[in-house]
Amino acid sequence: MSAPVLGEDALAGGTHWSFAVRRGLTLRLVDIAGGANVGMLFYNPANPLERYNAPDTLKCQHTFKLTRGHCLYSDMGRIFCSIVADDVGWHDTVGGNSTRAMVAERWGERSYQAHRNDWTLNGHDSFLIEAGKYGLGRRDLAANVNWFSKLAVRDDGSLDFDAANSRPGAHVDLRFEMDTLVLLHTCPHPLDPSPTYPRRPVHYQFFAAAPVADDDFCRTSRPENARGFENNRLYHLGHEGGATPPLGHAGGATPPRGDAGGAMPPLGDAGGAMPPLGDAGGAMPPRGDASGAMPPRGDAGGAMPPRGDASGAMPPVDLGRAAK
Amino acid sequence: MTVDSRLDPASAKYRRVVRAGDYWVHHVARGQHLRLVDLEGNQAADTLFYCAEDPSERYSAVDTIRAQRNVYLGVGTVLRSTLDRAMLTIVADTVGRHDTLGGACASESNTVRYGLEKKTMHACRDSWLLAVGEHPELGLSKRDLTHNINFFMNVPVTPDGGLTFADGVSGPGKYVELRAEMDVLALVSNCPQLNNPCNAYNPTPIEILIF
Image (cartoon, rainbow over all chains, first blue to last red):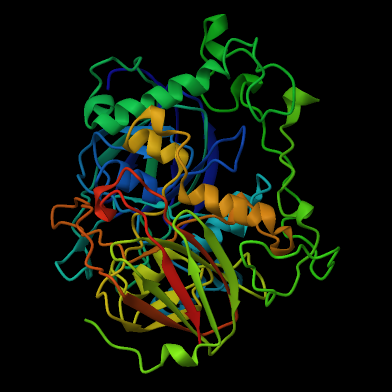
C-alpha cells in the first residue's frame, strides 16, 4: 500500500487495547515475530447492540476461515470491515479466548506483584476490561476473531492448532466499511501448544483506503457481499449528510463527516464525528423484584423464578455528545 | 455416533409440541433431562442456554468447541458457558451430529444470504426477540441473543476451510437429549427459514420433553 501512514502503534504480547476506526480507513496488523495472535471484537459505536457476529460472517460466505476477500459482518447484516490484503491465508474465528484458569494451568500463574507487566494476561479478561471502558460487559462479548491463528479441521471435526500459520512480518489489512469500535488483545490463542506463555508483539498502522470500486475484490468475492455492501450503503444514507438523524440515535443530527472540511481526521475519535458510547450502567436488572410477573405466553413454564424489572435489562445507550 | 436414550417418553414430566416459527422458553433444573425431537425430519432447533442463577452467564459456542477440540456437537459433548463451566451434557442422540457454527437466521442476515427483499420474512432472531419482549421477567434482551446451537442441522467444514450446508442427517422422530449440569433457562426458536434447501423449504414442528 502506497498511501501514507496516518497513525501507527504497537502492542506487546499479552496486552490489550481498544480504539474507534472511521469508515474509509484501513487498519494493517503486522505479526512482528511470527506466531502472533490478535483477539478482536467489533461494535457499532452508535448502537453497540450491533456487534460482530461470527456465525453470520461464516455462513454468509460459506467459509470457516477468514482471509482476503472476506467481509466481517455485524448481526445486523452490515459489514464492519473487509479483508483487502492478507499474506497469512487463514485466520480463526471459532477458537475463542484463553481464560485465567487456562493460562494458570498451562503456563503457570504469574502475579502482577512478582512480575509487573510481564504477568500472564488472558484474552477473556482483556476483553472484559476493554469492553468496560465503553459501558459494555460480559453480556456484550461474542465469538471473536483470532488474527494470525489457524485451527485446521479434520473430517471428524477435530481441531489442530497450526503453529506455523503466520511468519514474521506477515500482515493483514482490514478496510473499515462503517465506523467501528475495535477491542483487541494480544493474549495467546487458547489452543496454542507453546510450552511457555507465548508473548508475541503486533504492530498496527492506519491508512486512508481508496473508495470501494464496483469491481472491488471483497464486494465481488461472493454475491452475498454485494448485498452486504448495499446494506451498508443504505445504512449510511440515514447517517450521513447531517440532515437525517440516524436511526436509533437519541436525537440530534449526525455531525458531518470529517472529510467535509478537506483534511480527514485520521483516526476514530478525531473531530468528534463518532458519537461516544454511552453509559451502559446497570448491566443486570436487579433480581427478585417480581413486579407483577408476566403471565407466561409461549409457555414460559412458570418454572422460572421471576426476575426483576426488565426495564433494567437493556442498557440505556446514551448516545452522547451529539444529543447533549 | 448415535446413542439411544434409556428414558421412556411416557415417563416425561413435561411434553410440548412447538410449531415451526414459534419460540419455547423454559427452565430445566440441574439433573433433569431435556429432549428435543425432530418430529418430521430435517428441522433446525436454534437453541440458547442461560445460567438460571445469573443469565449473564450463557452458552458459549467457542468455549464448547475449544474444550472438546471439535466443531461438531454429539454424544459426550459438554456444553460450556461463557465462564467455561459445564452447563449441559449431550447424553443421547439418534442424529449423530449437530451444528454450532452457523448461528441463527435473522431478517438482516437473510438479506445478505438470500436477497434484500427477504428482510421481512420471519426469522429465528425475531422469535427470540419476541420471547424476551414477552417475558421481561427473564431479564434478557438483545444483548443476550447470541451464538447458538442448531440441533438437527448438519454444517460440515471442509479441509480447505469451507463451510457447507449439507442435507440434514436428521430424520422423522430423531432426537437429542441433554442432562442439565446446572439450573438453566432454555430458549428455542423452532426455525422458520423458508429460503434454505437444508429443510426442503418446509419448516416443521418439534417436540420437547423434560424428564
